Image (cartoon, rainbow, N blue to C red; front, side, top):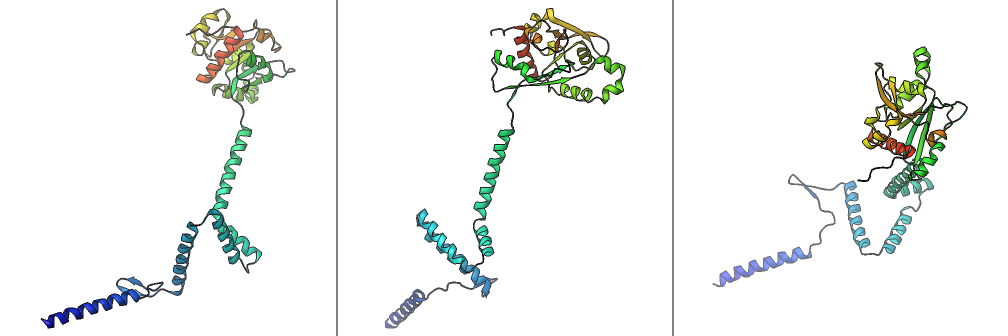
Length: 300
């Protein structure tokens, strides 16, 4: 019995001694690595890296409990200590590396703001009406100012603008000397713009109207205007021939309107036709037709 007690006491004393040894053992700062069951010592370079990581971790914990002002002061002090003995060039490189992300973010933000500012400054207000004026008197320049009255009296947003371009194009010239006509940039530029719905309306004389109908630039009004306008404008319909010499309504005679009288284009018969095949171009055309013929919208 006494022998068993002695064994237990000896085991307990050995266990206490082992525990005491473990408690008193101070862990090394950097323990050796274990690779495939073998103990491998750190190299000097690896020790430096691990030590830097440990110091950085401790610094972050220390900074985390500080106020923002205290953190700035500590970081400034560290930078100055690290830059001691550096040349001017080395200081610049150090600061660029230290602040690389703030510099990148600031540069990108400034670039985006500048791009947005330039885009806003270069952007133009929306267009209320785009018009092509054909075969006007060459001595009289046609500008968008002729539509200022329309913008004002039709209660269109004054920030909107009108676009007007003039072209000297005639079907007779095209048929007489097609080579000379096609060499003229107007005979290339105008149909391209018209077919892309750049223009909402075309104001022209008879020669220009015949050119537009024959080349299929002008669209039938019943494809553009609503039924109430088509009915109201029947007395002003103007027919012209298409490419196959078939006659259809292509335009309206606006010679008697106050707007047409104010144009002073150099010819008496003034016609209005429509090249635009988009909903926006046709909406602009309808608004303009209602204005010059004074046809209000039907109340729904």
